[in-house]
Amino acid sequence: MSYLCVLTILLGSGMGDVSTGWSKIGGGLFAQQAPPVFDNATESSQALQPPAETESGIPKPAVSAVGKGNDKADGDRGNFDKPTDLDAYLQELKTAVDSGEMTEEAAREAWDDAMSKLNKQDGEEAERRGRDWIGENLVFFLATVYGSVILLFVAILMISYTVVKRRGKARTENLQKTMAELGLDFEPLGDESLLLELSSLPLFNRGRGKKITNLIEADTADLQMQVFDYQFITGHGKSRKVHRTSVVLVRSGTLVLPGMQVRPRKAFADGIKAMFGGGGIAMDQYPEFAKNYVVESAQPDQTRDFLDAKMVAACERNPGCSFECQSGVLLHFRAGKRTDTDAESIRRCIGEGFQLFQDVSERLQRNA
Image (cartoon, rainbow, N blue to C red; front, side, top):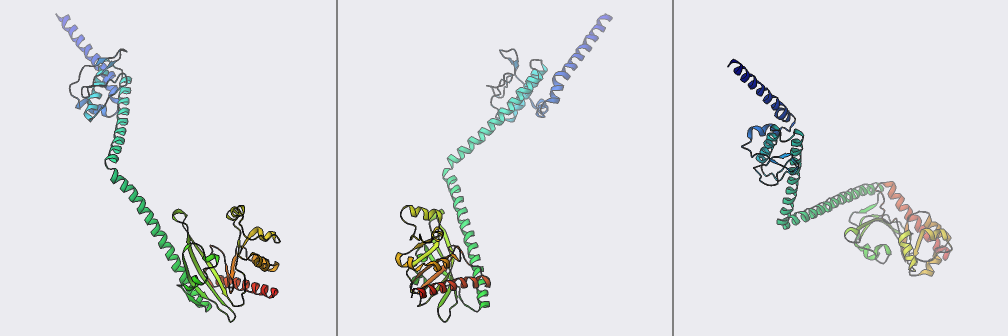
C-alpha cells in the first residue's frame, strides 16, 4: 500500500512537471515572441472549435467567428470584419501550438499573413469607398475641382494686376520727381490724340488696348520732342502679351521723309517671311546692315535712296534701336524696352532721339 502511494505521488509530480515544461515550450515562449495582441487575446477569447487537419498533415484551426475561408496553416486567412475575429483567430493559433498540432513558426507565419491580408483588404476597401463617394457625388466633386482651378486662376490674375498696378504707380511717381528735377512738363495720363495722329506708323498699327502714359514734353524752338510710355496687347489666353515701350517722338516741318521702318532683324520670324518673299527691302549694298536690320516701306525706291552710307551708320550707332518715320514725324525706340526713371536715363533717351533727328536732317540736306 505504501509503495502504491509513493508511486502515485511520483506519477503526479512527473505529470505536473511535463505539463509545466510543455506550457513553457508551447504557450509561454510563443506568447513572449508573438505580437502584443496575442497576450490580450488569451483573456478575451471565447469557446473555440477543435482544429481541423489539412491534407499535408499540418493541423489548421477553424475560426468560428468567420466561418469560411479562414484556414491558417495553408496561408489563407479569409476576411475579418471585427477586432473580435482577430482575437478568436489568435486564440485558436495559441491553442493549436499548445496542443502540438501546429509549430510556433507556422502559427507566427499564419498570423503575419492574416495581418498582411487584412491591411490589404482595408486599403482596397478605403479605395473602393473613395471611388464610390466620387461616383455618388460627381457633380459636387467636379464643381469643387473646377471651382478651385477657377479661383486659383482668378487669384493669379488679381495678384498680377495688383503687382503691375503698383509698379506702374511707382514708375509714374519716380518720373514725376525726375521731371521736376529736369524742369520738363509731365502728363501722367498721356495724350489720347497722339494715338490717332500716329496710327499710320507700324508701331501703332498693331494689337489692341493701346495706351500712351507718362508723357514728357521736351520741345525746343525748332521742333517738338516728346517721350512717353506706349502699351499695347497682342494674342489671347496663354498667348496674350502686353508690350511696353518707351518712345521718343520728334515732329518738325523740315522732316520731308518717305514712310519707312528700320528695325532689328528677328532671325526666326523674318527668316520665315523671307521664305515666302517677305523680309523687307533688299539692301545688298550694305550686307552687314542687311544681316542685322530689316527695312520696310511702301516706297522702296525712295527709302533705298534715303538710306545712304552715313544714314546706315547712324542706324547702327545704337544697336537694338528702331526708327519709324513719315512726313513731319520721326520715332525712335527699343521695342519692348522702357527707359529707367532716373534723370541720367531720361537725358540719354532724349539725346538719342535728338541725335537721330540731326542725322536725318543732315541726310535731307545732302539730298537737297
